[in-house]
Amino acid sequence: MARTCYYELLGVERSANDADLKKAYRRLALVWHPDKNHGNVEEATQVFAEIKEAYETLSDAQERSWYDDHREQILRGDDAITDYGQADMGTSTSYMQTESLMRYFSATSFRGFGDTPDGFFAVYRELFARLRDEELQQSSSESEDDLLLNLNFGGPHTHYDEDAAYAQGRTRGTDTGTGSTLRDFYNFWTTFSTCKSFGWLDRYRLADADNRQVRRLMEKENRRLREKARREFIETVQNLATWVRKRDPRYKSFVALKQQQQQVREEERVRRLAEQRAAAAEDASTYVCQAWEEVDYTFMLGKHGVVSDGAESPTQFAHGELEELGCVICDKSFKTAAQKANHEKSKKHLKVVREARREMLREERQMAKMQKQQMQGTPEDEDSEAQDSDSVAQDSDSVAQDSDSTAQLTDSAEEDALA
Image 1 (tube, rainbow, N blue to C red):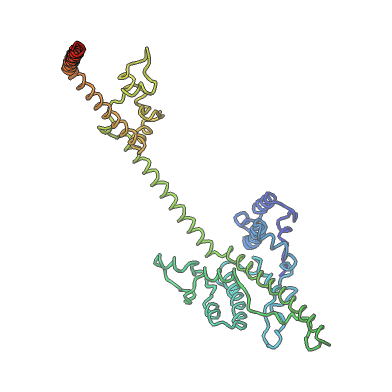
Image 2 (image 1 turned 30 degrees about the vertical axis):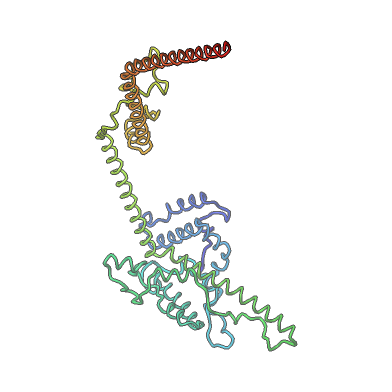
């Protein structure tokens, strides 16, 4: 089947940007959309599907890069190549070539998304079954064999995630019955790595080597060709699995369901947040001031430089606008009453209030002690003055006694001299 280049189909250059592609797609959609071709619905449907496929491929950067690199191979399709390559050395089995996979990168390789023999599910189910059987022939691992045997493309009614479908009470495994999910199928093929050796691509027969040096060169060249073909085959299969998954209606339904669930969760989150904000606003509007918050702190205004000559009285200032929009003890102002209410509940504010209380109690005790000392000040002064008078009298008596003793000593000295 002849294939048309996507750029030619859209009527754009190969250097066209996203805006050019969108403009060309919209122009052609107005012409070939089935709703606008009631007299030629079948042809219009087919052409419009090709136009849509071309736009989806070229508008995706990764798919466009792949298409540009393999454009000639994709356009050749199955007209220039066969499905299977040469037999591997030592075996009688033929394997699918990398080039033969290119024709499946096109919406023209199937007709519609039904389960008819030429429909989407039948075509790609058969293709991946071929690839699976080839890997089973080369695999030497039992665990790998079990995994490959459980892989199945399924049908139109296969759910992308069987576990999610089972959780919703749907019938499980109606199409495959293998126990694996379609998610497992695509995860395997999008990370595919082949077991095939690609020995049929060897250019030289080692038995024809004349000497050891030539044999080594032959081995090196054969190994290079094998590795190159192996990398290309793996990359092609992985990209084909990604290409098919993107167009699989079951995967599209799964993605749409996940987006819908995500939207519901987001709406629920927004609703809960709105309820929490409404509840917080209601609590703030009905907040009752506690007793400890009604303590008069106006005596501290002078320490903050608020009270001055000619200023309003502390009582008027404390009960004015500043009290409603500010915290005097913390020296802060607020724009709303709710901010002030939240501040008065904060740990920092409560700590400052406790320190202010302790300071007030300390000052009250000091003032009480000073008043008590002032009330007891007069008797103490009289007693001290009396004590001072007695001490002066005692000093006078001691001085007099000293004078008498001195006089006695003088008289005794004069009597001794006369004698």
